Image 1 (cartoon, rainbow, N blue to C red):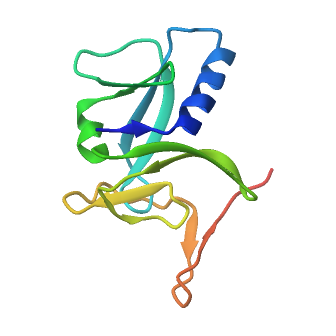
Image 2 (cartoon, rainbow, N blue to C red; image 1 turned 180 degrees about the vertical axis):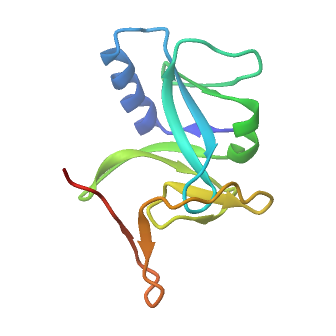
Length: 135
């Protein structure tokens, strides 16, 4: 089962209210990619598909498709604020390895499709630096 913290539910409700579509769902999904093989994705969705799992908390409904559910069992969606910024995070007990920037992972049973995600790990220190391009 996937859980949603109170902080995440509060922020999601705020974002959905700004969309002016009260019937929206938030879809949490897993896609191939990132330097560890799988990436997390979140998007607003108007429709529930037949086999979607629905998680509800604080008036927020989150959809997870069956394929993504396999990788997200026991995960927690949270919203965090720190000196570095704020955003949603997925705490996933199935991830045995994650990218230093936290955007990708792989599990004991599946490696996904690793791709360069723009992060670089210093082999001597193990520290990860996320690279961004400025226009």
